[in-house]
Length: 145
Image (tube, rainbow, N blue to C red):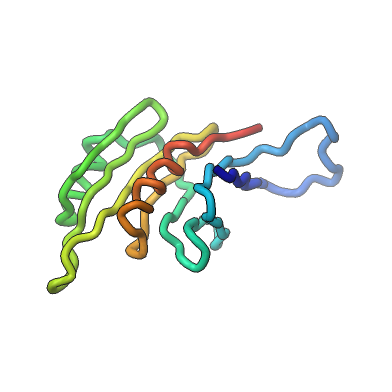
């Protein structure tokens, strides 16, 4: 599994940091073959040419699992699974598609990584096996520094 470290810089100092000091950043555990791209202040990840996961830094505390479940169900989604720890809340669900297209699987999660709260969501381009990979990426986020 390849790892990507994002450097989240608050500003530039006049002097460089001492050589012994490692930069602080969000460590994103990407599955083999996935790539990440910074888009504004957000990050998208997925196989080459397709963004299947979006990561967004937001303010605030981790939501309760019941609140996350209620939010996806209010949009007409059917809950498939949920997980909750002190630093992670996530729900996997299915969404009906228009017409005869059937349903697609999706994931919404929130991870507390160091001083950051990261919201993770799959895109409409995510395939079923990629939804599970996206969940693992979100749950595996860590903060270094």
